[in-house]
Image (cartoon, rainbow, N blue to C red; front, side):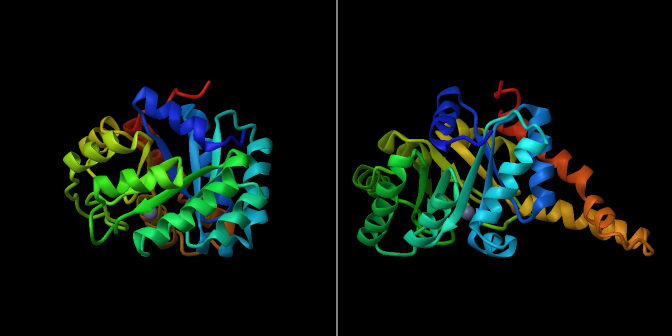
Length: 275
Ligand SMILES: [Zn+2]
């Protein structure tokens, strides 16, 4: 069932595990993720970027695809439909109006005051509808989040979850990187809300576990899925040059894709959490 993200992430925070946030790009990926998480009895967040929304056709289409798949596939685990890196109040509003149960407003490239103002506007719109709001502070490939600013930001915006910049990077998959756990712990202590880790693809398993221990309750995984799927499909096409049925081609990435989801759910401790 489609649920609001606030309670789910709070539960993860309390029980020391993290909800996986997997990015979806089309019907097939949505189906693979829902089925794999249902087998694991893992709650799941389906992240959709603005460009993926455009690729699907629009917010309402995404909502309908997800909502219908949950029903048709008889998915029993809690599912959150989340706008990933929403760039404006308008896109967050559109997502919420279409039925998304969680949104991220990413105004992190703006000055602190402007980031606070935009984020607060989204919170004011989302809160009465019980929609989870995530915001970002600091720059993922630049300045780390300051713990004091994070405290001010959370107090003034009333945001539900915060994605700090603590050394994490988007799109890094071929090598491990360093996370400032001391800073993460300090931020966690000051803000007292669940934290989100972006760019966890390629990050060492133990670092992911430490991050969860330090207060991270939602972990975003995107690049790893893209890599495993495209690699599998490429191999299939090379060994089966005569196949032209699109369903067979897209499906050829399914097994490895699902194996990766099972593996990640295990690391995050989200398996067997949904009953
Ligand atoms: Zn991100």
